[in-house]
Image (cartoon, rainbow, N blue to C red; front, side):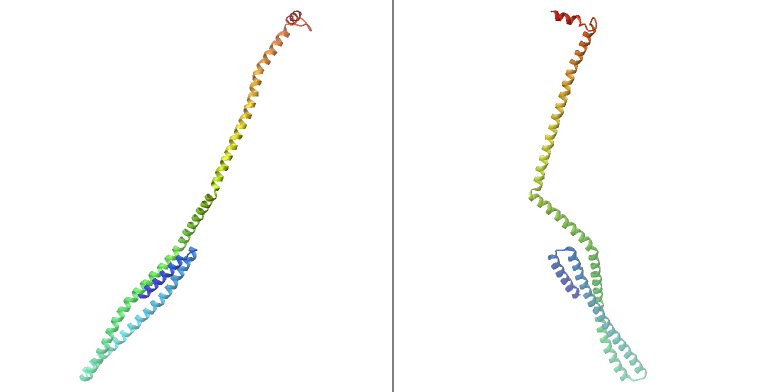
Length: 237
């Protein structure tokens, strides 16, 4: 299990170094995943080696157990043949192999527990790498969005510092002033036209009255070419 502790320390160290120096989030994440995959391959080799060691211990246990059983059978055979001395020698061999087998069995059980934990850790590491791959695109998208927001904010800040918004406000005020002046001039022009129409309407009544008067006077004449009496009287006087 020390291998995974060392590996975790290495991965953390490398990733922290990458993050501290990160300029491009996408490249940083890709490099981090490569680091994890490299560590995974190393761990896989170490786990395979641990499994191989476990199998070797298991084989040693099985061989010594087999020898112990073999010499037990030999002792039984010697007893059956009435050779107790030979049976004793066989039982000593059996006991020797039995003790060695017991020791290998204890080692094998320890190795088996260790390799089980190592395999679980390896599967966990593999799952985390797959999770990192899935999250990479999401993190890259979030980083790009954050960078875009930062760029926009910087642009707005730069514009404010240059006084562009103030200039825009002044231009807007100038345009509004020009619009007001134009509207006033148009109103004055409209007023001139209205006054002319009012004057024309005032003189229209006088013209109508004059025309009626002329018609009335002409209608009182005595003959063609003769002026009306009112006009002649006025002339004589």
